[in-house]
Length: 70
Image (cartoon, rainbow, N blue to C red; front, side, top):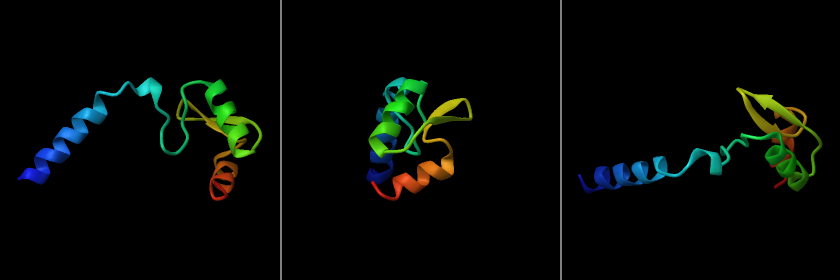
């Protein structure tokens, strides 16, 4: 019972954080500029769209290649 309450509180706290201030764990960003910055950090080139969000690197396959090295 205590564990369920703790999980519920953590979930509610997470939902309270503004979505625009976070990147998705897979690397989805609201702006192309954010994705370009991450691409520079990873060492890859370009950006691409995925489900209306921006991702670093020229493709998702390229992104995963660079993520394996970081």
